[in-house]
Figure (spheres, rainbow, N blue to C red):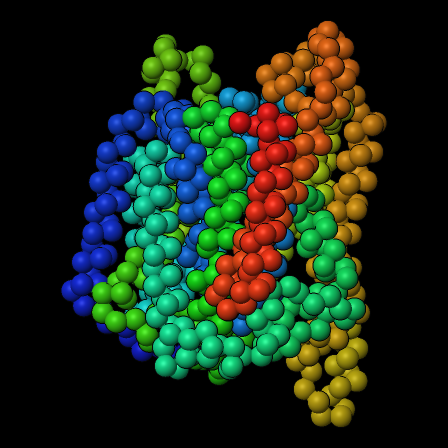
Length: 639
């Protein structure tokens, strides 16, 4: 998500708030404080309560918490930027992740709950054995818990700073103090209440946030300047209102048009990315805070339904209010520069909301911000405490009693929540622009996803498979970027010598437009596909030249999880008779759920834009998907 300040920031008019606005804001903070205090004593009982809510979350709370966490302060701004550049179809850049999300629902949600572990990183040492597994667990605790979470929270803070800058015209060099204040408040309530308070506050915050964005969409779209849905259809190019991208051979795009993808880009997004690459919130096979919520559910049934609700709400309920405001900003602010398109969302809030509703929308963004930051802090701390501190530094057996151990670990969890907050603040100060960060994250996990999927379903995957798939993408990424840099320097020097004699200005952007298409393997999607291919070959080779996990490790894992798939050698050792596989019915449920969700997404869009014939067809398609999904679930005994 590209949320950042330009080198020459716009000058904004201050957006005054009245007493009603401040009443909304004050009431919001009081509710958050009340919930945090209410659940603080329960969170202090044990690590299980602090990080997993005692494994007692009902599906709707766990599901809402997942959705709220992915509704960060940067998300509406990012969607606005996407819509300005590539129309509605531009959202396929993230809509494609539904395919992997639904895979998690039917193939992994029950397994995560059945594993009975505290974090997804802990899974490493129940699936693999020995010192290599311990190393991988510790490495992932630091990499995901500190490095990756700091990047994520850094870009969320950059988004909040952008919003505050437009709202109140705060000088850029003063924004750090406001961001720090928001971080401190969030860290304090997250450290007090643990996941119980975070999840309940997520439910409240998401409800407020969705109310706010829907109100904004109604007000802005129906303003005289936009003229309602009919005004949008009249004033915008028809291409920008198309739901599906255009597949082309050159990937060309209009200034305000329809997303156009080359064959390679389409294949990367729709055919490969969802299963091949690790990305926070869309991990192949589940992981991160999504796995944390699955493991926090009451039982396997609640785990599955929470994850299913998350996928439907994430892709169907949330996007359309953002998209409508994004389309409206094309009409309202046509002179905004390319780097400032995203800020049109906040400018619409400033320019069109009456007193009272401005406070509601500010609370909306605070709610979105806090739900994401609180979850990231709790998730990050769980890795450090459970998978690093408790595992390697202060082990459970060093305490006189289990009660003392749990109190100590909870205290350290609360302390480290503050430490993570400080690290994230530092990361924020180092991010001038996060353009390309999401590509960095995707490419540095390219090829790992298939291992994360197969480790549940194929006995032959071993710890060296996952270590290889984790490390190789970093190496390939570094080599490709170094080669690209060296080649570009040579290209730059050559072109400068050719251009200056004829009095042309050789800007970096002009030269990049010529260099990048000529070197497709250096840049996304070419670099992504190349990294996936190299990583996949490397981990497959490593799998077969190293020994499988010991029979003892595999047997314990099988007895705990009871996975389907290729586990025949383990079943033979355990003398377990072969059962008829339900994987075909899981596949049916998966594809049907994907069909249902995409149909619902476009059904809502068709109703908004008045295409009732298309809406009727999509309704029938969604209903068919629902019925097939339920049939598959029944056959697979998912009740």
